[in-house]
Length: 145
Image 1 (cartoon, rainbow, N blue to C red):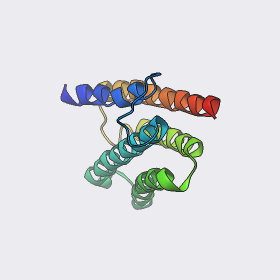
Image 2: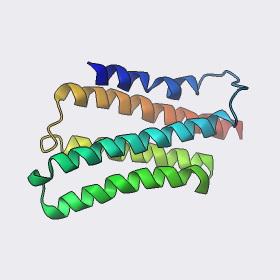
Image 3: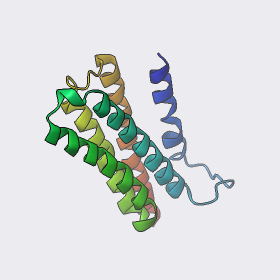
Image 4: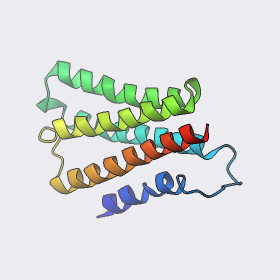
């Protein structure tokens, strides 16, 4: 399935940016590039969840629907703002927590949002790897400081 390939390919930048390799062509340090990619993916994931909410809004109470729309938008906004308002280590921690939040929202509303078990399995693996990469990026950043 195409979404699985794309999902797993999306892990490559997270993993590669953790490798002990000097990327002299990068305009900034690797941790900042990692954070930028993380924020882009968070905004994308929040947007896909937002779209699902629009499709299945009739299955949710009006209050819950509004709340989930606001939360998904806040996730994208916070990820964006963390890029330039927070120190890198704190921003990485915030993004890690935002990835967990998105995952938990999907897990909690799985039946309402009609998420397939194959998709959920993939999301579990992707979320685990992404969160682990964030933890390693944080350790790398703290150890090098």
